[in-house]
Amino acid sequence: MTDLAPIEKIKADSRGLRGTLARSIADPITGGLAEDDTQLLRLHGSYQQDDRDLRDLRRAQKLEPLWRFMVRLRLPGGVCTAAQWLAIDAIARTHANDSLRLTTRQTFQFHGIAKGALKPTMAALNAALMDTIATCGDVNRNVLASANPVESPAHYAVAECAKRLSEHLLPKTRAYHEIFLDGEKLAGTPEAEPLYGKSFLPRKFKTAIAVPPYNDVDLFANDLGFIAIIEDGTLVGFNLTVGGGLGATHGDAATYPRLADVAGFLPVDGLLAVAEAVLTTQRDFGDRTNRKHARLKYTVADRGLAWFVAEVERRAGFALGPARPFEFTSNGDRFGWLEGFDGRWHRTLRIPAGRIADTYDQPWLTGWRELAKIHTGDFRITANQNAIIAGVAAVDRPRVDELIARFRLDAAEHANPLRRDALACVALPTCPLAMAEAERYLPQLLGKLEELLEHHGIAQVPLIVRVTGCPNGCARPYLAEIGLVGKAPGRYNLHLGGDARGQRLAVLHRENLDEPTFLAELNEHFAAFAAGRAGAERFGDFLWRSGRIGNPKAAITAD
Ligand code: SRM
Ligand code: SF4
Image (cartoon, rainbow, N blue to C red; front, top):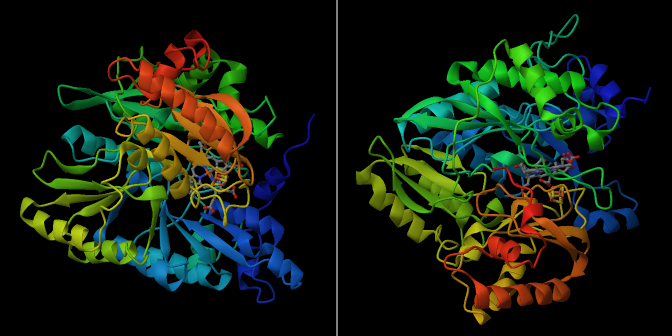
């Protein structure tokens, strides 16, 4: 029998994720944690990192790396109140690096937190009724839901489902409260984990709910997904999707991005039972020997969808119905003011790469803080790294507009579709896995692409560009029309041909290109597109139709 992956023993022996974390955090000798505790910390929502810009300098000075912690919040459906925003903002300025990072999974990350500030950070979050439980590690992560839950009563019902799913799939261990919040210490055996068992899941597990026609959560990239089926304005149930995931390793064909399969229909009251059945099937059948083969997508691909569905039905205690028809039209956000079913208004603002910080001409951290001080509704983070000022009474709109204008919070919105829809992962300097720049490179990259698009007269044509610093796919580049995936400093793989609905994978077109080479390559495709575009055709669709990226029948889609 093949050996279990080393982390399996760490989880199993951890006494409900306690390990020696409390001691590691209290240890004044080092700014880091004991090795095994760095693994356990993830399941509590934090990663140990170091500033990679300073690595060589620290090494030369014979100092340990400058250990700092990334902390990720649990925010089902991306919803937080104005008071919570103020608490988050205060943590960013007191304990983190004076910035907030909105993620591609509808939540906030802090970067640059010193070990000694971990507990105060968690305490401040707890005081504002927030936590970071299960936002990282081998558990169900932050649950995504379409970002505009008050568009109709059915949208509201979906947002409630996301919260219920998130709560239902949480681990039961009180370790978080003991370690970070000085809760009462466990004396005997750890709490039972009926869903997870003592080894939790073989790998991370991601869940999303989408409300057609908007696939703004990129549902097909998730292990577990639910497509809301709304009939006559009422949420009647969901189409279940299973087995999506994007992570891959360069040069290892056994790893690949995969779109989720649509598995069947379930009524609303079957939601928790089916989610539990999918999660426990993966718990019991996922590969615990090889982490590169441990996601649910490989369990489904290896054993087949029919086997997987039969196992889920057996565990859930009922059969799924045939999937109901659905149609997605876009996976982007909708900007500007939108009215909700309750007469309140919602304003989505563009935040490039999700980074909110004060700069000389864009004091965004301050601006959002000032907004939170006057706002009586809540905020919604989108899975496209943007934020919504939600639930604004019509009479309050002018005050909100005045603050938006004063702090230039809409500065990124007046640009073209390229700048409006692009995504970049964090990458350097904090991500230990980054092989190339992403977030910091995005402005320069977009400037150069813009020049090419303007040259061909297509700068106002929608185009989805996503860039990541490595093949893990955190900004979902394999679903973009143009995906750049970091291979080495300054070098990227070029993926082409995703669609605008998150339902077709881009293909690897050329590998290991420097900037002049991929820009020259794209320039040719843009020229052909400008000359041969049919009507309102999208760039990704054109590439397939015109045969520039192979046979359209070979496209991997989730229709
Ligand atoms: Fe991710 C690991 C950042 C969304 C696939 N991801 C990481 C780590 C924690 C690096 C690490 O393991 O040490 C990155 C921390 C960087 C930093 O300094 O903050 C990181 N991932 C992010 C975020 C912040 C990207 C962003 O710019 O917004 C996103 C946080 C989401 C959240 O709030 O939970 C983020 N990551 C994603 C997504 C997109 C999604 O879920 O829709 C994916 C692709 C979908 C998927 O999971 O398949 C993704 N991240 C990965 C993987 C590859 C997983 C795999 O199956 O191979 C890793 C590496 C790993 O797990 O081994 C990873
Ligand atoms: Fe880091 Fe790679 Fe994810 Fe980017 S895609 S944040 S470089 S793990």
